[in-house]
Length: 331
Image 1 (cartoon, rainbow, N blue to C red):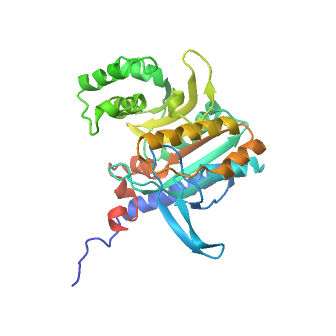
Image 2: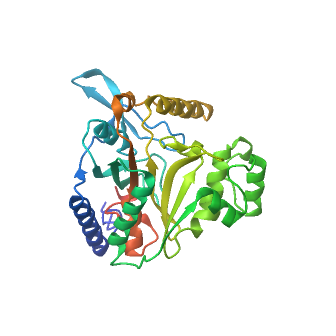
Image 3: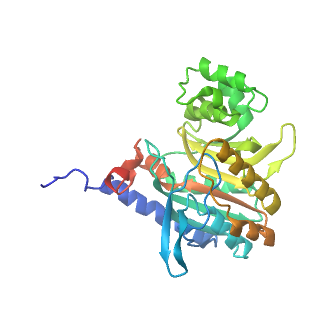
């Protein structure tokens, strides 16, 4: 039986594929001009991310070296391997690669997507935000005008758009805020954590208002939402993390990177405990990363930028499949 055209043609138009090629070329030119080294790291890893909010794909290798077989994981980000390179003294690096996340599919999500990630030894997140701004403005210049950029703290965004303090509000107050905003809940609200309520309010009531006609950096997150970032003491203490938004779309996620191996291990172990409480798979820790941190990874700032979402804005489309050669349904 002949199936016809359905299922074999590209999800994207030829024009969007040309825009993708042009943007990838510009990214490489941008970093080449700044003497940032392009690297490749393995897609397969012996360890998986401990973050309770992200699930890894797993596979199994049987062959020389592992006659009885061994589980491996498709990386959700090249971050840990790139940090091992930083600890080896490679200097500033970037990578464009495919990454994989279980259970993520929708208007702006595909379980396989393209990520641009780069690291700047000796920089903090403020310096990196300036470079992110420069890159994104250059990449999108042919498609839209981005003459204005703003920085908004996580605390100020909640105060401005929903009238609460995310650092002091109780779970009951967050629940009442979500109810008042008419946000529907797909899970048992009685078991929800404080961070889950914050994420719910952020994604439904705040993110759609960020980056309208301009780049918006949301920064200074709660420490509980940045297990890989430096925490700056204060009242309240904040994680030196930022996210970049344009037209309500999250484009990038960056950190002033934590380089203390002992502190990083403690945070990973807290994640694993939380995964157990949620009934999630207990993933093995990345001991190679922790060893690299122990050896002396230099203070650095790093960021991951979603190339497909950037392309959505460049192409003026609202579905991620329209900028991918073959989305999940056509893979």
